[in-house]
Amino acid sequence: MPMTNYSASTVASWFIAWAELEDADLSNMKLQKLLYYAQGHYLAKFSKPLFDDEIQAWSHGPVVPGVYRTYKDYDSSDIRLPETSGFQWENVDSETTDFLQQVWNTYGGFGAWKLRNMTHEEKPWKEHFEDNTRNIVIPVESIENYFKLKYVPA
Image 1 (cartoon, rainbow, N blue to C red):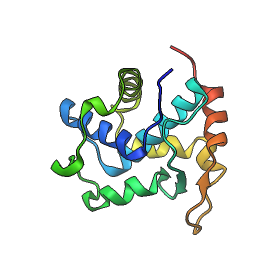
Image 2: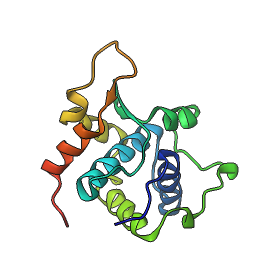
Image 3: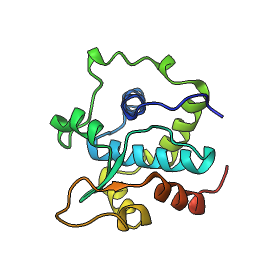
Image 4: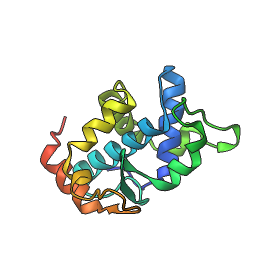
């Protein structure tokens, strides 16, 4: 089991760096969904969160608000890591890197809107989203329970 959990910002930086390496599309919406799926599968596999930042039920699916705000100026364009990010591959241990690569290999090929639509069909978002209501947290337990039912160990 990996030793530590990370900030959502570090996990987001990993996905952004990986997308750059792969020359792949990565908008803020897609990044948000990858964070949600990474958290869900991590909870299912290790029974503890990958990151402590809360995930909220927004109109376009699950969102980590702090990470969203960091990259919102990119709108629907591809995100690039700022030179000042300080991200290094060594910031993430090898076991977590392997895990994040699996998440990328499972979900990274989907477009942002496909991922958005997938999350709209899933219980954690459906049970917590309320139209015209902001800042509704999707409880970690809700995400963990859903993914434990869905998750099939490799």
